[in-house]
Amino acid sequence: MTKKKETKKKTIPMQIDDVVAPEYVVPLGPFHPALLEGEYFKLKVEGEKVLDVDLKLGYNYRGIMKLAEDRSYWQNLYLFERVCGICSAAHTTAYTRTVEMLGEIELPDRARYIRTLMAELERIHSHLLWAGVGMELIGFKTLFMLIWRDREHVLDVLESISGNRQHYAMNTIGGVRRDIDKDMIPKIEEKLKVLYKATVTATKAVLEDGGIHARTVGIGTLDKEIAKKICVVGPVARSVGMKIDVRKDDPYDAYDEVPFDVITAEDGDIFSMALVRLGELVESVKISQYCLDKLKTTSGPIRAEVTEFPPGEAVGRVEAPRGELLYYLVSNGTNTPERARVRTPSYLNDYALLFMLRGQDLADVPITVASVDPCMACTDRLTTITDQTTRTQSTNTLREVSKRFRMK
Image (tube, rainbow, N blue to C red):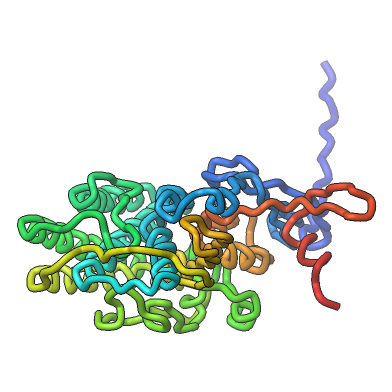
């Protein structure tokens, strides 16, 4: 037998630096496990880096503003509460505040404290929900389950006050529908103590855990000057050091007398947005306790008498959990509004994603999108444009609409 001659294979070292990764377009949505609502991100990537991004909405458009013009002011309470499930109290507060401006209606003191309490309980619910989703998206499932376990406490409080965990139906024109009995206050205070401890625990985990730092610090950074130009609001604006808050800038309900701090950060990354929201949880617990103390000593009615809605227009705004929520109403003197417009905070904050996603790793896209706490269903607008000359229609992305109508 003759031995086969062994041939030594020649190895060629891989020149990683010389490899040029091709550019691809990666679709995220309109239906994706990380995105609970329908939205489409067109990501232009090179390797694992996002070079550019475009956003298309319009999958959840419901025409609520047009529907409101065919219903009475009272029927619209039910309608506007369903703009967003998480911010239902914020929407009815903004709507009733705007209607009360039209009718020059003064709220009773007890109604002001109850409205403020409900708004802060809803803020606690929203921020805990956001924190839990964020932890799940970066793979920290233990903290996700712990945060959502503690979120049940605030839902129990909301249910004990209103009867519902969502869509509380508390606000009405001129006040609130339900009172808070003195017997309920000690139980709510016990729940607030639990929520305060839970917030401290979650904040400690975010500050000390290296895995959370690796996935949030320096990721999805929003430049402060860009934030000012595109007019972001809420925790997104406060994460870049913009100290804006409707509760301080244009007080409503009982916020003109409630002591609280506006929480800000400086870096504008996901970590900063988390710190702002966790800090706001502590302030919301304090505000809730203040309102409960006032309810112990404040008596009187919980709603004012409403007689008419004179002709005119009004703009009302509140600080929803996601930021400034604005309502515009036009009255023609009847029981039905002539015009109704709603500008939700996500309508402004979602545009920031076009800048925050550039230069990020593809794996960080879901948590970056979640960092602005987007609500597509309440934001949604149709992006179909009709050419009046040719009578043709086209569906456009956010960037295409911006380019088409940008002033020269």
